[in-house]
Image (cartoon, rainbow, N blue to C red):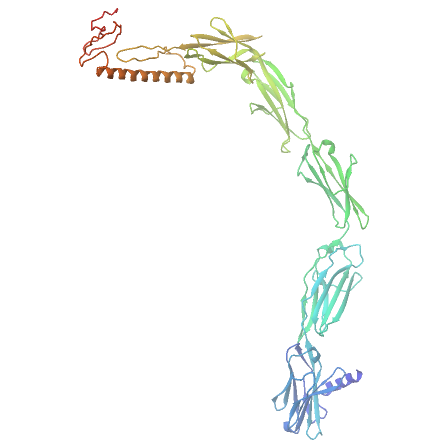
Length: 621
């Protein structure tokens, strides 16, 4: 190998000047080409015997420094030597009388050799030669990078960060590691190793591994590798993808907080406590209520329907599995409350008629409160103390006190006070006290009475008879008594109310309505007589009974009209009383029946009564 190197050096030294000064050969130091491309090596020469008196040879040096001929040319012939690696892939052209070009097609990696152009005179007295080194290049594949997926602990000594691999390059490429665009150099905290593999194709593959001691700050860093490789005439670079590694570090602080509800907390709420450390190593958490000493091995605790006794300091501790270090944090839970509203006087109270009502409403709370008094769902006061002057029966009833804490939505309590107004009975005037209806029909009489103590209600008729009320019930305003009364004649019914403070009455006047019928002129009709009601209020409606009676009357009138028409038709045809076409009667055997027919002539207003014999009968007959 040493002899071969000397020979190559000597050839490189003499390739420009030749062996003798009379034959000169000039060639390039090196020619660079991509694998698979075409290489052209030029040879420029000068000979004292001219082009026709020279012998031209192309040779190459093997890797063991042996010369091998691949082409020969003299004045009579030229030929490519068979059985060489370049057979069928080379050609020699003369671009001028003194310049030759060796062309190599489909360049291979093994073609990277030294090529010699030798010029000799025909007399073999003088010769010269030159050489060119052929460099072959192959572009590598894009580099691949793979980071550690299990996580890197800050307690490890230079753990593996990532590996970078580049394949199929020629010549061997170089790999440089970067952290956030800053190149990494080997140091006490950084270790970089490379491994080169020669593929069967002759190309090179390089694998590089990066190891580095990490801190918590590395969790946000990015790593990548850069590959520099050679091509004809320059050096190029390719970057891998960026990766971020998972850094495992112990907690140095722990936080505990109320996840829900947001804002202030009241009794009865569902409270969710969360606990978390600022590290990401596997660790255990314990939440503890400092006041009671109760603890839970979890990083999330739910307190259902909290009470005041649940408030206080809650702590959370974190124990790191790897370092066995414990850190702790705490928070204070404040629970607000609003006790039941208390109304004084309690439940109910009695206030004399026209006197003053005074009541108070209060509730113990941890927050500022607002009070409102309601009567019939309307706000009447916004003070804790309720004062109502001149109490009447209209002001009696239920008063509602509502106390709320505006700082927390839905936090309120309420209490009620039933107020009775003490006084004599007051009968609320009914809509109708004067009415009329048909005989034998029923009417409902209602009497609403208020007062305190609760009045006693009785019903009496015009003759002083006590009537039993059909129903009697309690209402919010007092007592409601209802009497079902049957009309048998014109009547007067009295509602009597009394208690310890006095009495009151209301009178109902009921007019009975009857029917009468009369027969007049040629047809029989039925008429209904209704007593005058001028000046009286409307009757109590009896829609169902009166409707039936009217329908019956109409039907009777229609039947009588039809019967009268039939009789009249028969009379005109002479079918009755043997009429012969004139206005007379024929005597028939009748055993002297006393049949009377009512007739009215056109020229007289007097009705004539005829007997069966045609004789005029006195009215008494």
